[in-house]
Image 1 (tube, rainbow, N blue to C red):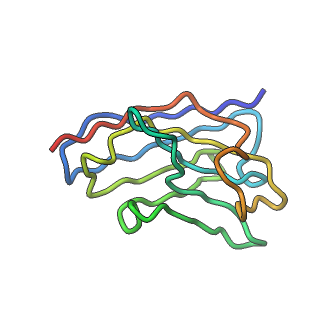
Image 2: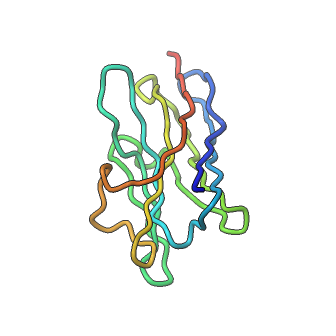
Image 3: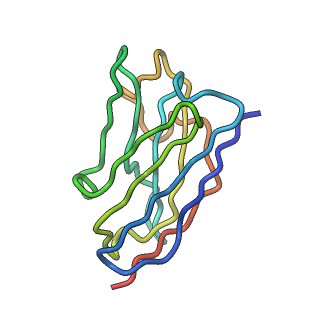
Length: 129
């Protein structure tokens, strides 16, 4: 049974940092496109970052609003994915979800939110001004 479990959310002041973790059970990251998504109250869920493979190279992508501040990474030995968040802003406040989808070679190319099959339960991030 596939399961994703997020942790690491919390409340911080603007300018602070948090690192989210996503532990995977029942599958291995290397064969999946992985991503972090977020949903703020009253807004649609949006893709924050993805991490996939292109051959032997890992490729990342970020939504423009977090570029330079967030870093997605993975530890295959621990089957865990991370989202390091720095210089947090009040507009980063949301429920954050990790997600995965089996993909050919683990590539995220062309994949969008509806393509992701597996989702965690979410972890809340609140940034105060």
